[in-house]
Length: 253
Image (cartoon, rainbow, N blue to C red; front, top):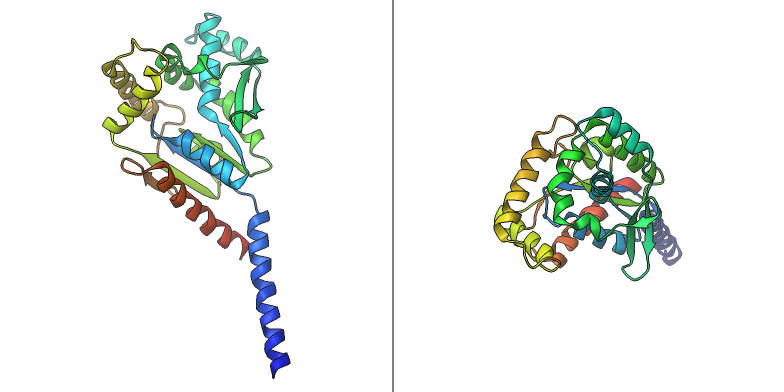
């Protein structure tokens, strides 16, 4: 009897160990979509760090393309000019040990700082709405996700880039909260910026992102809504990690 109980215990322990180990080895794709200044990149970086996944900032790709267009005076209303410019653009994410994340490089140059300027912010939604630009960026994003084990944030990641992602999160927050967050970020680099400018820019980007013809911002039907208006960064991370565990448990069963 004792021997039988011992065997039963070993059997259940084996099953438990197998499930836990399988969950640890299983890699999924996590998409985080939502409006500007909802903290998408913050959560994406947190998750990537906790799960030892690769973080891909899709917004940085569109910002880098916009920066290139501005620097080279590309007329983005001219399809031929856009196609010619895209042919000269090479984007890659290079690990930055100091920040435990990757920086985006445009044609071999680190552009993490210049792509955050207000000038780029004012134009990025226009550029990102161009069909050829989106096709260019989406193709590269999909290549990056082939091996899974990634967290990617943006506007259409769960609907267009990875419609079959295992976990989709749609982030939102009150407009006033988002404006305050964005203002603090920009004011640290530019003391001349006003909160009214930030508010107008945010509202314009929301409108363009939600109403563009190609891949408009919208919640995927199977996405989980995360309103972090009153959540701390630790709170939102705990929530998201629980969702990851839930998905991995289903995947491993």
